[in-house]
Length: 314
Image (cartoon, rainbow, N blue to C red; front, side, top):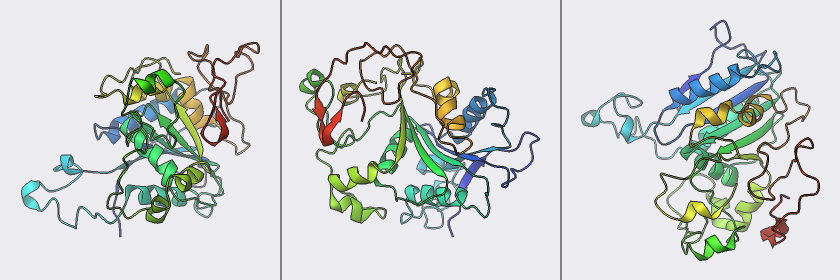
């Protein structure tokens, strides 16, 4: 049996959630600071700022932050200190992937017997958590879920691009390591793993095909300048919330609230258009907002990239 510490939201009256009322589940993966409690607070704050639809509230939306404890959490996530067997198999089971945990959470919330009104499940990550969610969309299992599943990827340091092409060729020329794993898949060496081993062994084309089956949202802060990045690799892509590298601001922005808590809330596939106008870079606007987009705008990048994709979206 796998025991996992989770942060779980409550109803508006501070009682346990009623599974028969829930219509949405948001699973949030935190960043480098190992602070699921902070991410729970910021997600709750974002939900509380959603006032356009009173049906979207603490009773209809479940928020869960799973806590993946590591060696830095001795005395916190790990109940024992270094001297008390903190690395024993009772606490650290290397055969269970965190991605397997996410698989189980999706299956759990998609159980229509337990959650008869569930419409949408969001797996969200910011910063280092976004890197995890991005990788999960690439090699995560495919499920025939009754609920729609969306993966929200906010401000990752790297994307693990599945092509050596980049929209800005001049940046590529200035950065010879631009595609080295984890920014791309050049020099990728398979490491000991227990999850999706057959898929990874099948190669990049198989991973890309799996990735295409997933519904994904990429969110980027226009004031996130990659200050913690130690190399040139993250600066070879361009992408739009007016914020720095801050999960709370990203979650609470109109774009964050839409993707995390309101898009497809009733299971009718109604989702908000793209956020972030005027665009800082012409292109990459797959779901334009008709109120804001300039119909006469000329895309500056006419190239066709891997898999016949164009920069203005697919």
